[in-house]
Image 1 (cartoon, one colour):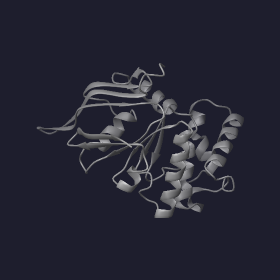
Image 2 (cartoon, helix red, strand yellow; image 1 turned 30 degrees about the vertical axis):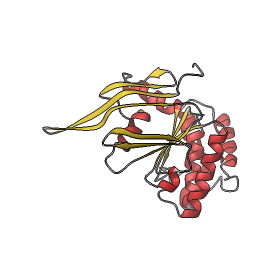
Image 3 (cartoon, rainbow, N blue to C red; image 1 turned 135 degrees about the vertical axis):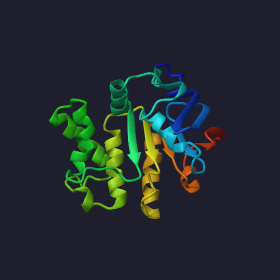
Image 4 (cartoon, one colour; image 1 turned 180 degrees about the horizontal axis):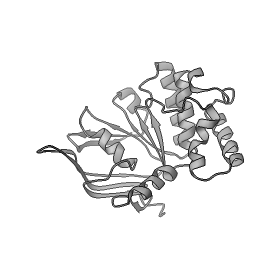
Length: 230
């Protein structure tokens, strides 16, 4: 990949949905470039297109028209198997509801994406231990999600998202279920990850969360309303 090339490039992206006889334009010709190492917050009122944009960025959906390039690869016309491969190897997801497997302990949850990549048990365990330590869970490795606080569960989710060393981390209201103290801890961890070079894109409705980022992109009615670097 050319180091001067944006790691994410949306070019005149539209996404429309048909609801009976009505066509809903969720995104209307959105153009946006994100460089490697940026920390960006996507904000805007309900219905502005944030979730649609996140689904596109996460290769969970395709544009109706326009192009989406991730790491120089044109995602727009890939088949389902190729999109799944991209999701597993180039993207890390952090959700509001953690999405952990309740029957598995901390290390086992972190290992899940590694097994899909064909890593050996030994290699997956070594990576998981390193990531658990990185997010401050070295004393909770054998605990299951129900034995952890919300903040600790989100740390597991972050470690799992990092397991495949993704190009981009995508966070969807990642502090939405946390108390203020735990939320600050997770945002502090995001700061550390970005300082270490990770590209981080988060969707949030909380202005105090958005202000932690270095760039705030605001959407309105499926279009770019503002794009401010801090």
